[in-house]
Length: 203
Image 1: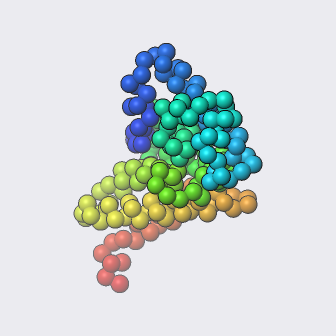
Image 2: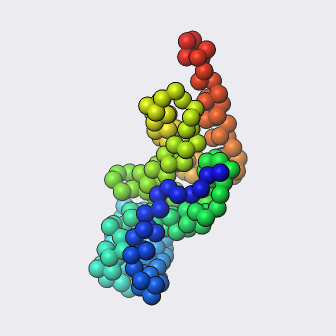
């Protein structure tokens, strides 16, 4: 069984606040999130400032920076609350089952993530998603290789490959249904892993 225990930093931060403050905090965060989503309907993420987000929901910048480091952090929080928090208490038979659930979320919200996944740089959503993929597949690939070094290398390799595949998938005009996309990725990865025996290495 695989439990969703990776990249759950927001819970740790929120637990430091009291009950009433926590409720108010979530109201503020959701208002900022709704503001960002509305703004992204008609302009690129790179053209949206923290001031724009605050102005649309009638909040000041101090309130924004109390909850988030920057607008990238807000995007990561949206993903966390809408996807990861929704599945965190579930148990999955494998990392692939969890990954398929995440793909389904992206497919349903592809208009929003088409824009956020193209942003690069420190604190970007792409970096956040890559960390999550690494967490999932570090567990999934554990014990498949002779050494920790080999495992780490393969996890990093597949994390980069899967992130690129997700971006290309969502940026298509008519992306494959999520279940079909996740199944094809699984076929590619497991097909490659099944051939990593001594005979293959000596060819």
